[in-house]
Length: 253
Image (tube, rainbow, N blue to C red; front, side, top):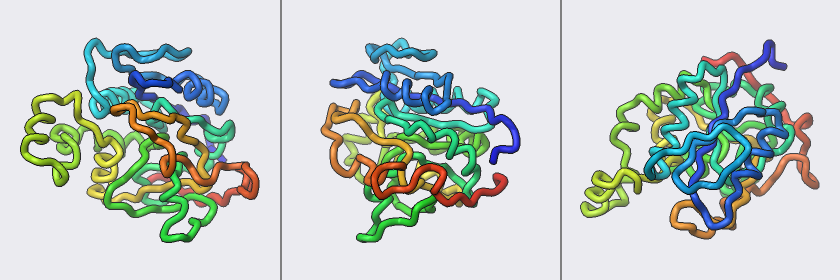
């Protein structure tokens, strides 16, 4: 149980897409108890019922996400959550998250768990918070942060120099990203690299408290069905409710 009222800062990154889901995301956050999410929007993004900061020019996926993260770090919050604009949150998400702070050696706690982190090598991960090791993090939809961790990330050298996964780029692609920062992507990969370098763990909740709800990505409007969806959602048939999920938390260190 929380010992005191927790001050949250929830930031949502949004951009234009074929079928906007921002209103659904914001509404589900409010139903779950996060009453004042703050939206960081690219030009021509959809409107919603939340405080919104729209950039004058296109920043691109990575730099728009960083803008929201820096705002959150400077907000004075006890806990931060970074959210994408196409996520639906279960009404018990905030209740559960506050009772799970913090998992051991926490880099982040993800309330969204895609298929490939709930079933690994054919085995279903246990119900509860699981530490997942991955060389290339995927799915930064609903990530809960201790401010000190996120502060290190947004102020670190990697944030200043990030242009994406350099190992997969040819020289022309690298030059293009350096000259066109609005095309820099791979926020999830970036965060995974940073958390690993800090020696911290990546925690995912199984079952998931958030579901990816968009058919199309804001990055080139690619189809996003399949493994981007959560396999197990809290409270669905055969899956435990929020109050039935084991909790093992401790003071942050």
